[in-house]
Length: 100
Image 1 (tube, helix red, strand yellow):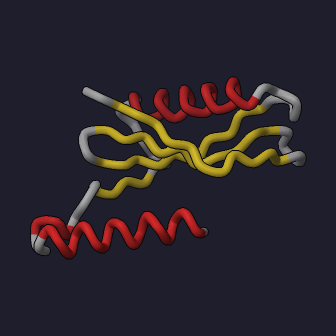
Image 2 (cartoon, rainbow, N blue to C red):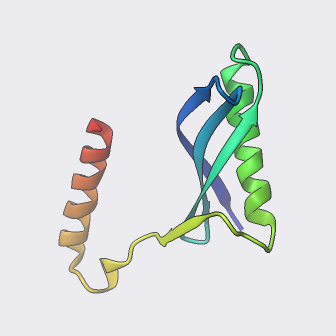
Image 3 (cartoon, rainbow, N blue to C red):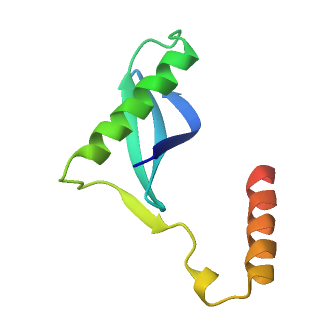
């Protein structure tokens, strides 16, 4: 089983003194997104923050009880659309997400 994580936009919340991020765990073709918060000082090394947020998400994912997560299939429409349409749509979404 190959489980990977992806983190976008880590933010520091001074009110709670914590780094916050949505961490996506990719498992068996499904994406599970978990809200994670790591209480730590603002000057903590960015690599350590990323690693610990990933560990938090993986721990939540490994539990049987997952009260706070969202998931979506890797590609839903690929069964119904020709491969050319799927490839063009995926390329467009990737371009849009990079521009955001």
